[in-house]
Each structure stands twice: as structure tokens, then as C-alpha cells.
Length: 355
Image (tube, rainbow, N blue to C red; front, side, top):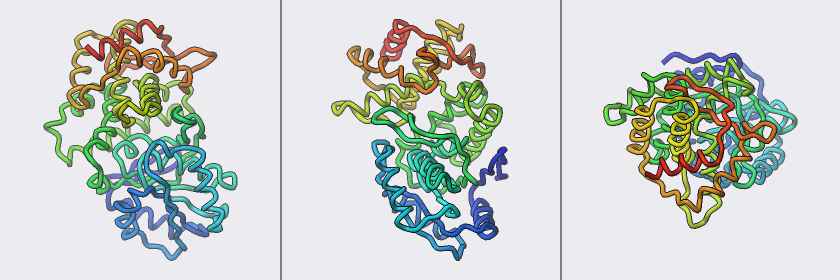
């Protein structure tokens, strides 16, 4: 599979990606290599990765705890301290090997350590391959509030090796699929149709769909790298989805929702709202709800949950001048940004999801 070249870096695929990475390490003058992993990727992904690397440079491994609850400044502080204790300097390279938590947090750590060192992302989850590691967004959560602290900063390279997907539980694969479904809904009806027909997909199909998904995101990001206009469309389903994810993280009596599971709910709600504000076709709304629920099942959201979830919307990063902004759809592949939605319509959307 050919590499994808962006304005700032390249995304390489499968076995050939390691040839590119090894050439890069050979021709650059980094003083030391640091590999950031979590306890899962340390066990299941790092051995495979190390077997592909050819370098004489000194390597140090830094491990963090796995999971969204550890995507915070406290974890960053631990990694910064480890880098300092292991004598990292401004010519060191940080290679982030993991899912979205590792690539987001690792990118932020690298961007801020000694005012910035280079980093490479090696996404090991489907979510990170098609979304989190692509586009130069780095950051961490503030308490239960998603991605409130961070910077835009591109990696030097992204290595996409779908071998790592073999290590993932089915739930994690399903979580990543939500971002791919989103790419179809905001960009291309044919792509959405392929993805929503899961039973007929093969592993070879998945490789091709991952490539297509990255191309979609890459094209959008290059037109609007700092999310002033077009890039906001990548947040379809995320305004309410992030609020749902944050709320469920904060409630001990609720099941923990993976990012993609929460975004899937958010997309059902946003599509319903689109029928009321943007003229989105009713029959497509019904089809999308059915397709998403067939993949993700039902999550019980009680009426008592509506108000605290809606209250969390005020922390969404797209908000401006105190107004909550939604991404909606006029049709599949026709997103519109900066849409104002009142609470009454959001409640109707929750009722539509629960119906």
C-alpha cells in the first residue's frame, strides 16, 4: 500500500512502514530514542515493533497505565519526569506506541518537554489509526472533560501496521469503527454504505477502508489545520458524544463507554437534530439509527441523565462566545458547522435514540 504524504509528514503502511522508519532513524541525528507505551501495548505490541527496528541508538522504554482515566496532566508529569531522569535532551525522539490515549498524550508530552522534541506515532488501535494519531492534535483530559488541554503539533511520521489490530478485543475494534462511520457520513455516502454493511467485510477490505478513512481526514485537515472552519466537520457526533462519554466516566454506577461507543450515540442524536434544523432526509435518519444500533446495540440513557449530560456541553471545544455549536448534516456528505441547538431539541433527540 502506498504511503500518504501530508503537508508536514508521511503516513506509512504495513511492512514497508518499517523500511521508512529505519531509513529515517539512520539519516537523522537523534541523541536517544524513547518509546512510550501503556501496560497493554508493552506486552502485546512492543515486542513486534522492536523486532522491526534497526538502530544503534540508545533506547529507553517509558510505560504508563492504560485507559482514558490516565489521560491527564498527572500522567504527563510522570512521563516528563522519566524523560528528565533518563537524560532526554532537545535532540531526543519520542515514539508513541499505542492507542489514542498514548498518541494524544505522547504528542502533548513531546510538544512541551524542553519546549518541544520530535515524536512519531505508531497507532495500535483502529481508532488511533484512522483518527487520533492523524492530524496533529495532541492533548489530555481535564478531570472527566475530554481533551481540554493540548496543542496542534504534527508528528515526524505515522506508522500504520494493521498487524497490531490482531491484539485488540472486538470492543476496541468496534470503537474505532465509529470514526470511520463518521467519515462516511460527513464526506461520502458510498464509503458510509460500505462500512455500514459489516457482515460482508473482509480483513482485506478493512485495510482498504482504513486507507480511505485516513485520506478523508487528511484532505480535510490540510484545508483547515487549526480547526477554524472545515475541520470542525470532523466533530460530527462529538459535541454530545463527548458529553455522554464524560458523564459516564464520572458515574460509578454507569458502565464505562469507549470513545467510539459514545460517539456512535452522538451521531444518532446529531442526525435526528439534523432532520429538524438542516432538512436531513427522514428515511436516511431512520436507516442510520438502525445501522448504528445494529453495530453498537442499545445504551440505557435515562431521563434523569439528560440534564447533567446537556450541562457538560458548555465545555465543548467548538463553543464560541458562550454558544454551543453543533455539526449537523443537510445530507450524507453535506455537513454544516456552527449550528445552534436548544435543549428541548436535544431532549427530543435522546428520546428518539431511546425509542
